[in-house]
Image (cartoon, rainbow, N blue to C red; front, side, top):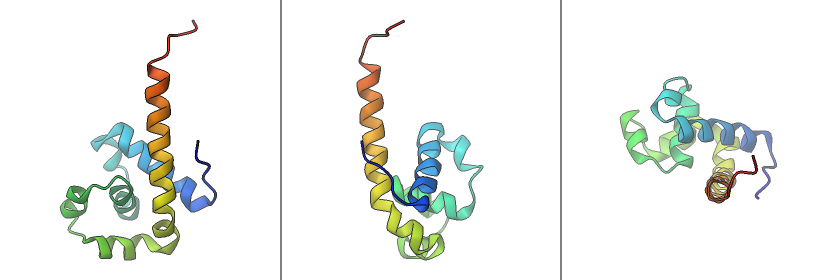
Length: 94
């Protein structure tokens, strides 16, 4: 499992994971920067378009710490998704 190193990676991971898992419900509670960072991590150009941001504008808005964190957060979310899928296939120990 990939370990997140910086606070920016941890914050963006939590925000993007929440949006991935809860969908539209989570997006409505996010700040503009959180929503843009999430859209970039989850590769949701449709969300960027809805917010009327280009990729360049979104990167500028979220700032350098989150922009640098995007690749690590994307990897961590992919690992989290694979881990959850693996766990779902295992029989319960209850």
